[in-house]
Structure formats: C-alpha cells, structure tokens
Image (tube, rainbow, N blue to C red; front, top):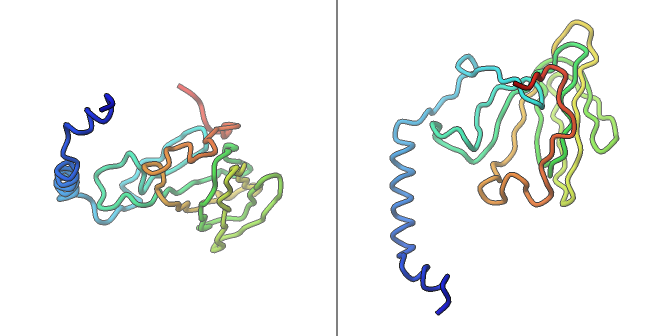
Length: 169
C-alpha cells in the first residue's frame, strides 16, 4: 500500500461524516434565523463600503449556501475594480449608476437587477455612482462556492484597484 492509502485506511470516513453532521447541528442549534441590517457593521475594505449578511466566515447563521452583502457607493464614488469568476446578482436598492463589465458600461437604477455572468476565464467589474448628492446601494447575492471551488474559483480572485474610500491600516 502507498503511504496515502495506509493513512486513509486508518480512518472510518462514514463515522467522520456523522461526526461532521453532529458538529454542524450543534453549531447551528442557536444560530441566527433572521439577519437584520441594523445589526450589521459597515465594513470599509478595498472593494468599498459593505454590510455582510452571509459570508463563508460567518458561522452563527442557519445557512451558509449564499454570500450576501450590501454595498454602498458614495456620491461621485466608485467601488474597487475586481477580477473574479462572476456569477453574481445585484439588486439595486437605491440610486442610479453603472457597472463597467469587461470594458462595457451597463447603466442601472433603483429596482433594477444586474446579472454578472459566470465565465470560465473570469470577468472584470467596477461599479460607479455619478450622482452629486445621493448614495447608490445594492444587494449582491452569489452562491457560496468557496467551500467547493476555493476562493479563487478556478480563475483567480484579484483586487485590481481599491475603492477610493479604503484606507489600509
């Protein structure tokens, strides 16, 4: 037998699956069922201003099958520029603006839904709020694929430009 096979033979993987199930049940026994916006801090990161409803690292909620965050762009502001695989849905809550997707401008306004395509080679996006006196806010939803495909998702996950509001510590 190979070293790997010998090592694998020392574990009962069915029992490990049951153990994992029990651990997950215990973790979620008192988990949050309703995530309230008022309970979420505003995070300033290289992509901009965000509030995370669901994230792979947030473990105290009932489900972790999606990543959901709200992003806010100040007047005359922009998000960071990001290269990633895509596959996101944006629901525009407030304001008007546009997204540059692979060099092409796509205008949006409140109550629009923006579909960012899923591409094997990835996409490059950046969001803009041209308004002089009004914020733009949108909700971003995507499957939580990081457990299955890693954060790189097969094509890379690279911050190409930071949002202007981001000040590294």
